[in-house]
Length: 267
Image (cartoon, rainbow, N blue to C red; front, top):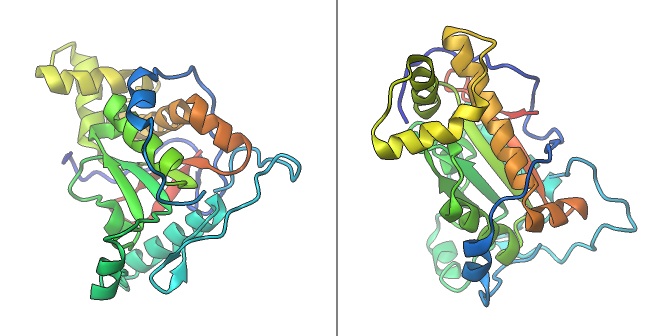
C-alpha cells in the first residue's frame, strides 16, 4: 500500500538477510480449513537456519536438490537465504540478471515447479519480491496481503508451499513507509473507524503498535513489530514448527527499505 516516503529507520536490531533468524513462539493458529485444503495434494518439490539448528541426531537427511534450469535449487534454509541475499545485492547495484525467463525454462515449468522460498509480502506496488530479490519463474512462491496480515487463505498458501512443495524458507517481508501500518496507527490514535475491509487490516496490525514512540517513529517501529509478530505466529504454527525443529525450515522476518533498496532481517 502506498504511503509517505519518509525514510524508515525502524526499531530493533538489523542484520543482513543471510544472518540467522530467531522466531519467537506464540499461540497456535486455527487450522480447520488448512488441513482440509491440503489433504491429498501432490507434492511437486523436495524439502535458513532455524532459531536453534537441530542436532545431527535430529536433523533429517536432505533430499537431493532438484535442478532449476542449469543449477540445483537451494535445498536448505541457509542456501535459500544466500540466494535471496545475492539477488538483493544485484538489485541494489542495478545489475539484475532477470533469471529463468528463457523459452526452455518456461517449457520445463509446464510439468513441475521447484521454488525454494515463500515470501509473504505487502501488496505495495514498490516491493515486488521477484524484483527486489532478482529471481525468476519458478523460484518463489509469493503471497501478498496488506501489512502481511494473516488469514486462512494466506496461511493455507504458505503451508502449501512448505508442506507440499518442500520449501525450506519462509520470509515475512515488510517494508519502509507501509500504508497499511500507517492507517492502523492513525486509526488507533484518532479512534476513527476505517471502511469495513480496511478496518479488518487495522485490527490485525493494532497489537503490534508501539505506543512508546510518536509520529513517524511510531510507524517505523510498528512496521518492525508487525514483522516480528507475523513471523512468530507462523513459526508457532504446529506443522511449520515441526519442520523448524528438525532444521528443514526457517521462518525469517525482513524489511525492505525503499531508500536503500536493501532487504535486512528483523530479529
